[in-house]
Length: 181
Image 1 (cartoon, rainbow, N blue to C red):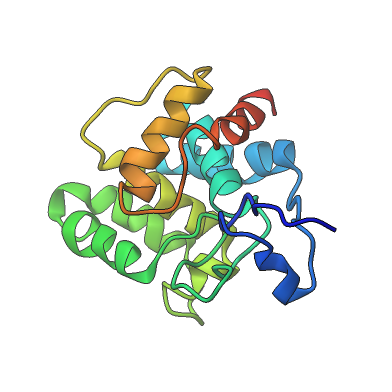
Image 2: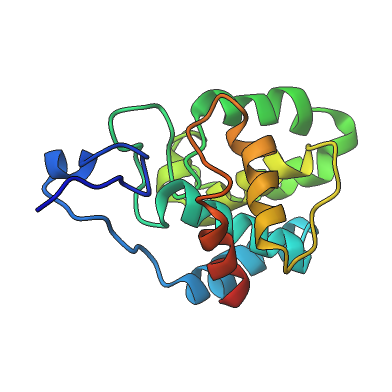
C-alpha cells in the first residue's frame, strides 16, 4: 500500500499508527438535520449559511469522526476546538452582559457532571454551539449558503486561522458535502 495524505490531519500515513484507515464519521445529513440545525435554532443563530458552515467545519476538522486530535494536539470534539479557544469564547464574549442571552442558552446545553471543555468531546450540542459562537464573533458576514469555496475560506480565516493546518482549497469538498446534505 502506497503512502497517502490523510484528509483529517494533513500528514502522510498518520492513521497507520492508530491501525485505522481514514473514517467517514457520522452521516452528514443526520449531523446537519439532527444536531447542527436544532442547536443553531436554539441559539437563535440559525441560517442556511450558518448551518452549512458549522456542518462543513465538523467535516473539515474531524471528518465528523474524531473527538480527540489525531497526533496528540489539544483540539477536542467533532469541531476540533482547542480548550484555549473555548475559554476565549467565554472570557472575551459570552461572559459580557450584552451576550447574557447566548451565555444562558449555552449554559443550559451543558451537563452538570462535566467541566465545559470535556463537553467538547462528550456533548455534541454544546460543541456545535461553541463552534457557532466562534464564527459569530468573526468580523465579516457569512458567505452565501451555497458557496462551498466561500464557506471553506471563511472556516480557514475565522476558525482554523492562518496558523492552522487546514487547506481551504482542499476542504471545499467537505463544505459541498454539507451543502448537499
